Image (tube, rainbow, N blue to C red; front, side):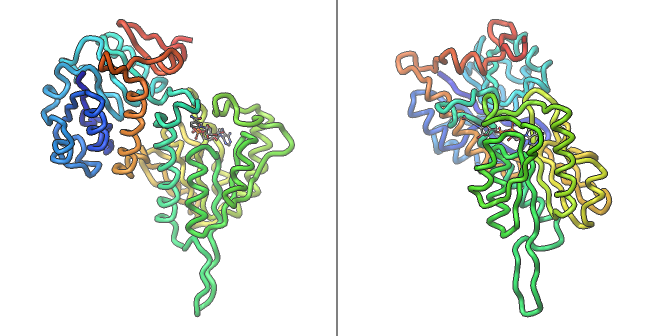
Length: 373
Ligand code: NAD
């Protein structure tokens, strides 16, 4: 059993899908591990550290040659994986809805593509969930990015020269990223409020010491919603939400938006008119910018200014904390493969529930229900 950890080729991607820690653990399971030279450099991992953990270093061709399983952060062009075993598994982030043509290319190349972002939200798969591990650090980084762009302090400060007032921070979308953003902004001393469409988040917001801002006139999503995910809201709800948010946003210094709907464009939560109502010098961070954006006028990969308000639209926020996010991503992959490891076969054997959820291609065909349905 040969596991290959390859260097990321996507522009701006600094993460890596394996660390010396996970190399050691895969070796302990009985696998051979090959790592492409330089794969960890942008995540602060030197080749020598992989070698010391027992990996064989080499160029791309040598790394994938004869591999049974290839690990990546963002799925590579399958043409760059030739030489792997026929039917080899490729476990990575596939962005299956956004990059459908690549899924077809994986089928045509005969690989078994395993989309780690399709991991079901069940208790036993929590430790394998890349969306959670990466969103968590994105939520943290979003607050730091906001603080860096903001020309004032976050905490209230009493100085001999007078008092500096606390920043008002509003978090829209309280999933994994939003909860971490609330906690981080609180740690920095801001006055924090937050909103979501799922009623279960109200208690979570309060338990972190923030103020919940909720639409009361139209019903939102009861409890957690299906699989923990939100759906598109009715027009009536969207109108009520816009009215509620308008009054609140005008008083905020920082707004961080994280709202996503799987398989769809991100919901638009902030209009240009609402941005114009904010004080000059305020900052908005749109964590959903690559999925279409929650904020009107946000531009992926840029910090733009509208009506004196900075709108931050960094791409690939997890990659901005590459050492930590790589460590967590790599553990997600190890937790996944080791949970299914069959000692006699010296290979993982997936069960139906998780296998069917994440497998995109098999036997030359696209097989995933979410893509076919
Ligand atoms: P997500 O990234 O899909 O979306 C972010 C947040 O935006 C969600 O809370 C969503 O409700 C919210 N949102 C969507 N539309 C909105 C709108 N119009 N206005 C305001 N908010 C809107 O969500 P996520 O971070 O992946 O987490 C969703 C839930 O799933 C959480 O409760 C989380 O704890 C749970 N979860 C469970 C597991 C598990 O059990 N294995 C793993 C991960 C997450």
